[in-house]
Amino acid sequence: MPISKVFETAVGVNAETILSRLVPAVALGNALAIVCGGLLNRLGQAVPSLSGNGQLVMCKDDALKAENTAPKNTAIDCYARGVIIATGFYALGSLIAALIKRIGLDVHPMHG
Image (cartoon, rainbow, N blue to C red; front, side, top):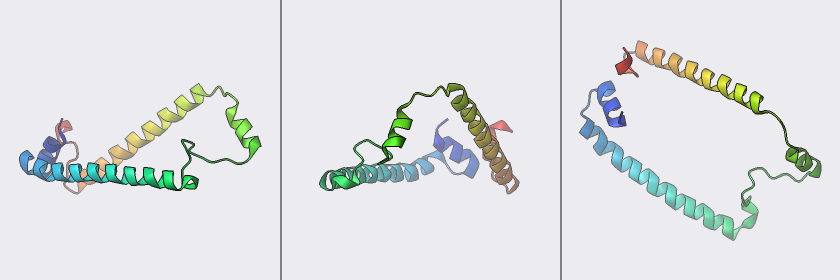
């Protein structure tokens, strides 16, 4: 379902009006993101100490580097954590939607 249709049912404003306001904001945001990405790339090339060169966390301790390279069998642990986190976010979202509905704004108008 397009976001303009969701806003149309939730806010009560025509979808074309919503699109006429969303498109410029999205285009401006995308253009700004592209420009900022280019500027940050140039900054990283000009001052290499600011760039991690693809490494997200810089680690100077050799013991930690050796520890991180050891393979770990944590597939089940990671899966269980992911399920718990996803369920928590779903419950939190449902709770927030119920609270918002109590103030008069129906977040999910199609689901009664």
